Length: 132
Length: 88
Image (cartoon, rainbow over all chains, first blue to last red; front, side, top):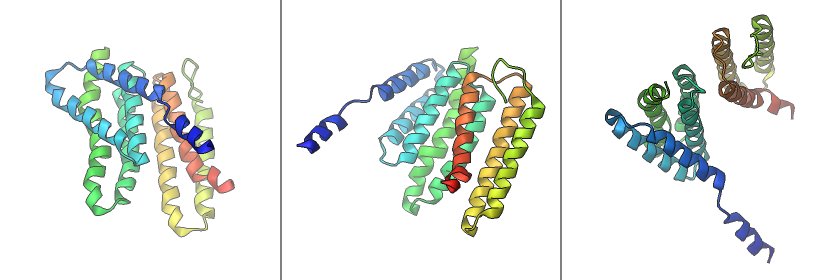
């Protein structure tokens, strides 16, 4: 009996996470520049893939990245700050990638270092320009 | 030390960073497991980089609440990983 109650509790939706995703979507909607349309699509796909993965590191990396992109769009972080955080995160990601089996390292690199670089080099400059 | 909307006290900031660096060095020196030393050195270097970034931004008066909060969170995580866990 108690286990059934626990199952019901675990099935509850997480409104906070949903709110954050929609907030990022609206931030990315500001990016109308056609030259970065592919990068925007790639970022969204990689973030969705990372958040759907069972590995905590991917989820945390995606969550931190989302939060920081939102802060950039609000003018709370500049390119310098964002680059700094990305470099820190890339260092942690490299340790994570090295700990993965060889056949999984390419995917790990894509869902961590690559997604961070896409955000820093292609999305953030446009977000900053839009916020000015 | 680097609070938005308050004057930046560089001397106090530098003293606090030096104190923290000394704690990192103690932690590295006293670490019994050789394999953990490079990890602690990496965390110590990360702390130095974070302090340098924060100082640069504070000196330019460019600390936002979000930046302060993010840096504080990162530095605390770093500190917990390097030092606090050892005293548990």
